Amino acid sequence: RQNHPSTAIEIISGLPSELTTLLFEEKCHFILTQKMPEVERPDITNISVYHDPITLVVPPGHPFLSRASPPSFREGAMEPLVRNTLMIEQWKAILTHFRSQQVEPNIALNLDSLEAIKHMILKGVGIAFLPELPLEVELMARQLFALHPEPRLLLYRDIVLSHRRGAPPPYLDQFVDLITRYGSQENPPPATS
Image (tube, rainbow, N blue to C red; front, side, top):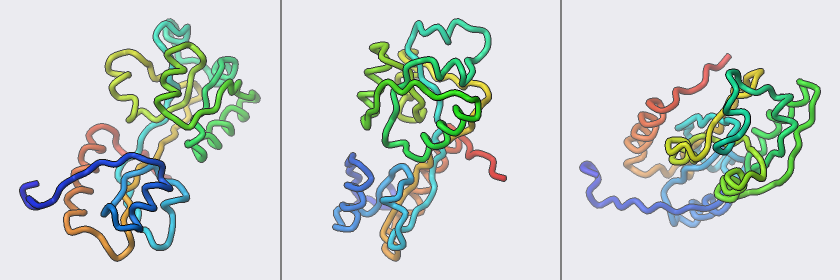
């Protein structure tokens, strides 16, 4: 703010396709979103700013919480699962991991709203694989709990800052630096091979 006193920040929420439209209508300078096909275009520059871990989320009192060891994917497959339909690539990896354990998950409900999924978990409808960042408040308040079933699946949701190619706003570098510093304190990027 000190270096750009005339800059106002307005936060707009929406689906990646909606945010991409706003970007091209020049109603915003950049967007922060999960990396998805909508933002993987030749006319958009994407900068990876955060690797958000995907974990198994359960409500208070769930039997998995009273155990000394983490549940297995085989045990997780027997539980009703609420599937986040916006996590397309992550669900492909999750399904592959279940199948590598010779089990099929019990998908009880498909939803595209994180708030609705959290509500279903709290109501006991099922458990879910979800990104940790949007659950920060519930995890800290111990309203929801994150578990890592065995064998461990290291899975992340890549958060990208996207802007129109050739049209970066003048303060972009400072904003990216701020976001990546926050992200590196909370969650270092996964090791790559």
